[in-house]
Length: 110
Image (cartoon, rainbow, N blue to C red; front, top):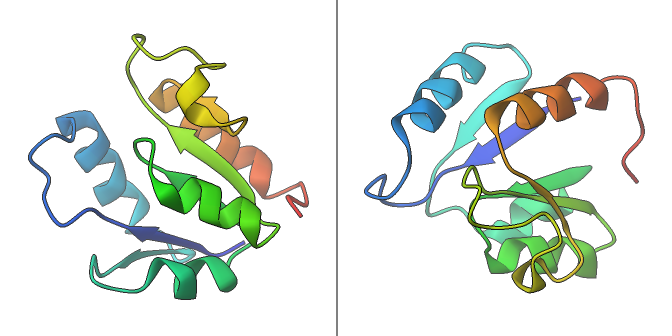
């Protein structure tokens, strides 16, 4: 699998652990950090699945294009089955996110 990660324009509300995690991932051959101004629709149409951080329209847009979608919200204040996730799986910590990346190499998310 190839992974594209599109960052928000500002890191103002993003945890330092997540920024460090992105830095580690971006050093892998199968990860690319995509410019924040790139069209989400363009990225989604060229991916197998989407991870949105936090709850954003890209999660819903992914399901519209029949792509598997996850929300990443590393805060225990939001429950996995929160009404805001609109039925999209929610990962609540970095370990779950890392596990999902590792499992994705052996699964088909379509």
